[in-house]
Length: 264
Image 1 (cartoon, one colour):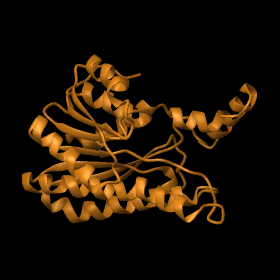
Image 2 (cartoon, helix red, strand yellow):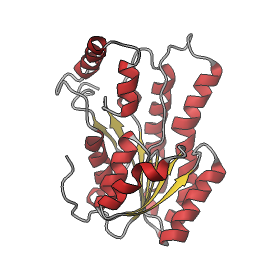
Image 3 (cartoon, rainbow, N blue to C red):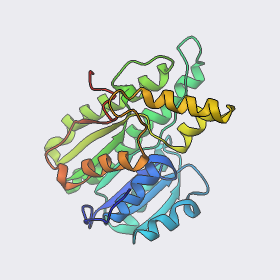
Image 4 (spheres, rainbow, N blue to C red):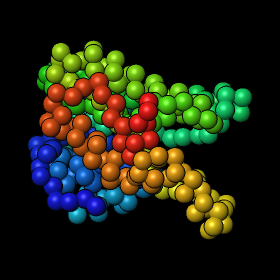
């Protein structure tokens, strides 16, 4: 569904975490199409062959880095790579994340801590690594991937909702702290999105009929559009917030959810 690029990120250098699949993969392709130079980061060892061809097909210039975003050293390394390879850093898309279902009484302490570490602490660490350069140059855009689960209370997602709610408030606090330094900080709150992980979670171990019913049930939670989003639809929201088109937008939680949170 992606159209031709308009150069909205021409001359920009962007780091994208969780770039190997799903929303991150779509964002990497779209940002490349719009002219950004990219540092694509993922924990997966196979990152280069999986998205290299896509970036090249968009005429993009990218370097790929396997890194653990829960490691402060790794986060410092990805920023250093952007500065060394491309001479700057304009955009940080904190997109890496994971999910787990369960109520508080069902989750272990280790599961809860792991989810908070991946979904929330990683954004603190990556931002902490990027901010000194952005502060020195007096500009920058940070976009965090939150979720509609961070805007609404939902059953069976205690840890996930807590982590994504934390992302929303971290975003708003950073927007206040760094706005006078020319740095914008926003987050995107995707609704149900047809990523490989979601589709696998909904259909794994089910018959074709049961899997289709699970997909329909998930789509029906979107009361307005009654469908799941495509990853590219979420990526366009990220593109807007990252670009100069959103130069007067900061501290915003952009729900790209087809109306799921219309009453929130």
